[in-house]
Amino acid sequence: MSTSNMVAESGFRYFIINKPRNMVSQFKSPDAVGLLGDLDFAFPEGTHAIGRLDADSEGLLLLTTDQRITRLLFQGPISHQRKYMVLVKGEVSEETLNLLRNGIEILVEGPSIYRTVPCLVERVADPTAYYAGFVHEKVYGKATWLLIGNTEGKFRQIRKMVRAAGHPCIRLIRVGIEDLTLSELLPGELRELSGKEFYEGLKIEHP
Image (cartoon, rainbow, N blue to C red; front, side):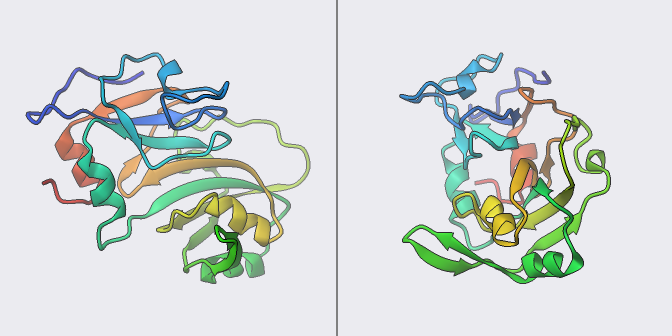
């Protein structure tokens, strides 16, 4: 675990963690699930997750005591890119890559049909090129790693996109949000950043 006891002049604290699978993005839940509080770190009072990752997803999650971040990151005029490594069933053709790149129809809350905005989609030959701490696991049958970068955050959007394209998701790892990345963090590890590093990495102006 990589961290320090840095505290900004404002008193706010900033963390990035590699959320393991089978853990929700919160500290409390009425359900019997893995919680952020199960991690081996004494988070300061008021720490909360910015955005979320589903329990069955893993990777980069932002935590802070700074209540301003959510508004600045998600409610501002500029959309911020998130990058995911996604392992899907089957071999993905160039035609399907273009379908995902150009926008694909998915079912969203309502329910209604929504067409996703154009986004980055590439095949990944070597997952460690995007996540140095990547750990392989055995997969049965043909499968393809994709790098998907998008600026939208609809509920389970990436999983819905690849399923709509005929390639159900096996594993999903968020590897970056703007310039903040997992780097070599292993599942369950965290790194503490200064406020300057955090804001600059997310490409938002420090209040």
